[in-house]
Amino acid sequence: MLRVAVVGSGPSGCYTAQHLVQLDPGARVDVLDRLPCPYGLVRYGVAPDHEKIKSLQNGLRTVLEHERVRFLGAVPVGPDGVPAARLRELYHAVVHCVGAAADRRLGIPGEDLPGSWSATEFVSWYSAHPDAADTGFLRGVRSAVVIGVGNVAVDVARMLARGTRELRPTDMPDAALTALAASEVTRIHMVGRRGPAQARFTTKELRELGTLPDTAVQADADDASLDPAFADPSGLPPPRRRNVEVLRAWTAPPRADALRLIRLRFFLRPVEVLARNGRVGAVRFERTVPDGLGGITGTGRFEDIEGQLVLRSVGYRGVPPAGLPFDAATGTVPHLAGRVLRGGAVAPGEYVAGWIKRGPTGVIGTNRSCAKETVTSLLQDAPSLTARALPDDPLPALRAEGVDPVLWQGWQSIERAESRLGASLGRGVVKLADWTSLMAAARDAGEAVTGP
Ligand code: NAP
Image 1: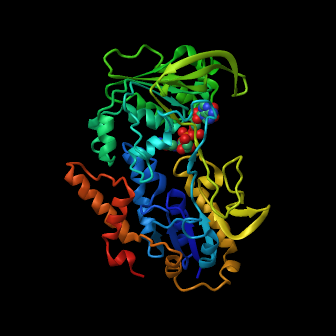
Image 2: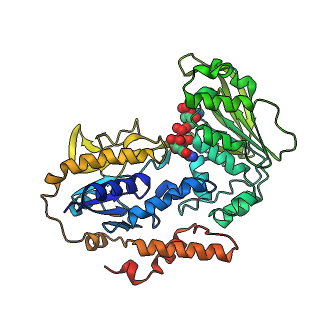
Image 3: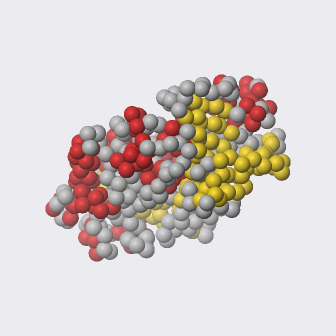
């Protein structure tokens, strides 16, 4: 009987588990996560006001509740937990679905000034990630500069513009809700180094900015018209054409009665984050122009955009998973159809799926086909992998490595605690935002959590 460990319980991990149990009627799968909570970026990355996307959790829940799938939370893999090599001994195969946990850097002076944060630090804070720090993101901020024009940039710009009325029904932690409610941000600049036709956001997400109450949106016509496709987008591929059409409609002067303004700027490349009184005061950009090939060239002309908060939203970056080969240039693990490659040769029993396999691109559903490819490879290899005898249940051996997994009942106990917390605040479910509360809630499940 095939026994597989999937490391990571985000969409790629859950879809991997799902394909395994669907395609192999005997397979048993343990889905490990270093957090006591499942669902990865669906829980800690999808914006709280995107309830429809959040509801994908229901599908992932069904996978983790499958009779041959077991969730093992609070199990770090690597030097601080279970060594990757030990995992290989305990399972016929290990599929690493650990995503891309770090942020890309800009590599410009001032990037680390107080007030300059990666968008993911901000997202983690309002999403109640237990490792997130409350840096006082919004204190004294009137103007924010978001660098990058992808969907994460749209998410953080939208969250900065949302009012309490819209945020209160979400599961956002109370501290973040209070801080956002007290926010004095009136200007949000979202800045792309290339043109409107090269922006990475999707049209649905872009359009949503235009629906925010009390917020006007304006695309800078002078910037945008540097792109020849802006005047006539008809030759662009449909997704990009639709983006440009939305932006064209936003070049009119913004309505005067709005409390906040989101300004979309283009052809500005960040060169320095400027300090004022020891923290961020502005970002200096170099004006760029299109090079005719989809890229840009600098012009040597500069513009400063004022902001007391800078959110660098320039993409995620994979972190080398313990014990696996890693291509630093792409931030991914080298693989052949999901089989890990060591020195160019297939490493038996080791697989990857999701962002650590293909890089941080695509929507959640992209992970389905990605996971299927990996599972297909794994099941082709299964006859040789299962020739090795394993202990009956790896759980005692995992505990011997010093971890104390949070089982499904523990996670359900966290869910109940989050419902209780919300009820006590007169809200719906409100997420627990720190390790102590999460672990206390998980252990509240008693015997079921800690027993064998
Ligand atoms: P992304 O789509 O790769 O966008 C990154 C942005 O940063 C691009 O505009 C890029 O510009 C810019 N950038 C990169 N390096 C830069 C630099 N040195 N200086 C200035 N700008 C720079 O990344 P993301 O927004 O983090 O999103 C990651 C993935 O998650 C995407 O697939 C996205 O669609 C997905 N996601 C989806 C949703 C949703 O569906 N609602 C929400 C969030 C995230 P260039 O194009 O010029 O490189």
